[in-house]
Image (cartoon, rainbow, N blue to C red; front, top):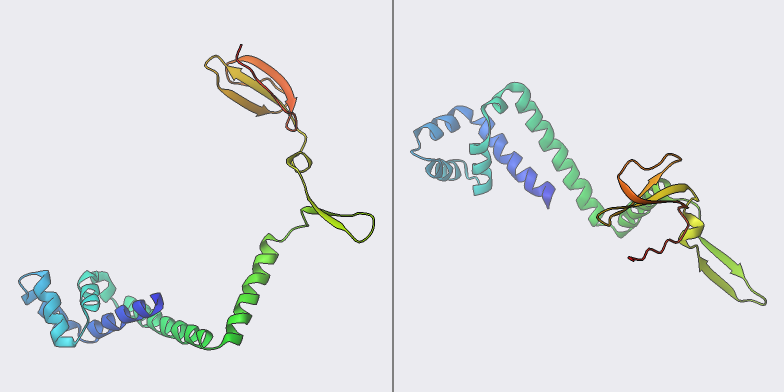
Length: 181
């Protein structure tokens, strides 16, 4: 839908570029933008969206290089529309596209398994999730409490740089219970 909408606008811009002198004269002679839009729609059989795109077009887009860019973008968008319509018309192509996207996602985000599968006596298996303690690294940190009751943790060997009333050396895996006394 977005590609069709963009192609629709580009078609209007192409019409304007082919009839550039007449479009400029029509816009100059119009008393306001609303009249210019209406006249463009009647004269060139454009939709309101196309006419508005022509009115919004900057003068620099009238250069020959910009004209080529508009033509090239129009060709790209129409090719994209054909490809998407072909894709939507075939369930086989849809499945192949989904498969390709899933393979890319797997390559980008795939990593080792994060669960442990434990086999018990007999045929039973248990899927046991790793806990945060097993996943988090055991780093040494300083935990501090400021005078106004804020708690902060800083990594490393050196003392924390914030004004702490109480400091405690701990591990990232340690459980810390604080009570207001």
